[in-house]
Amino acid sequence: MAPSTQTGSRTILRSLLANEGRRHSRSVGTRMSSAEELAELAESIAGCRRCPRLVQWREQVATEKRAAFAEEEYWGRPLPGFGDTAARVVVVGLAPAAHGANRTGRMFTGDRSGDWLYRAMFRAGLASQPTSIRIGDGLSLSGAWVTAPVRCAPPGNKPTTEERDNCRSWFDAELDLLDPAVFVALGDYAYRSVWRYLADRGLSMPRPRPAFAHGREVRISDGLVVIASYHPSQQNTFTGRLTEDMLDAVFSRASELAQEAPQ
Ligand code: SF4
Image 1 (cartoon, protein in one colour):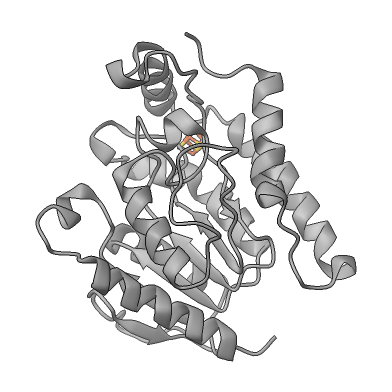
Image 2: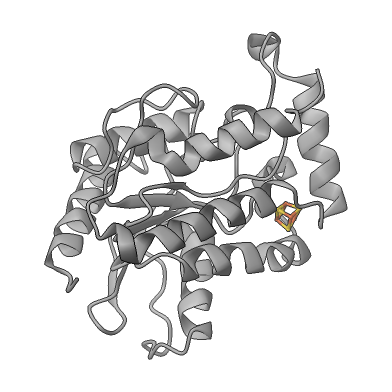
């Protein structure tokens, strides 16, 4: 079956930005415009076709499908971020999974990495439930936003440098509309992407950049903190490189720092 129709896409995008009905607690008057801009941005992202290789791959995966999901209609398009538009914790991954987010249309949804991520976020009070199966499953985020520097599923989870650079403007535009106090960078790719974004915004960055290490906490300025974490990929979780306790510690710390951050 072909990727989602335009009408279906709009419904999904509205659902993503509505954060499954959750209302954020900050002033509507000051935040509504950002929420609306994020909604508009989500529509633009979902229509992007800048990278021929990734467009071809995401649509091929959406048409061929995995046997277990043969009856499902794949999203098969770029992924906008997901969460609370008043988020103080921004979680950054790498790119959508071919049969996960590229199928369900929501970041880290419908695959094992997402199971690990949202379980940890739930235990830290950042997610309403420990599971993330599909849009409409009731998941909402509280004070958190989940995004990635590359919005289309890449073959072998490896975007090219050109594809990463093509996607940079989406990542930057989304972050510019948020007000994070804490970044959780899932993996070295995410860590470098966050670093590049913050440096481009003129923040005073420690030099040289501290090497990526799980649990590393780097203070930037104005109370802004970057926490590095291993990505909850099966490569890390199956091998025991990343345990649930390790991921819990990262999100518990992120939540604590966000609460301490100036409003
Ligand atoms: Fe567009 Fe990013 Fe997808 Fe490339 S990876 S087609 S820039 S959304």
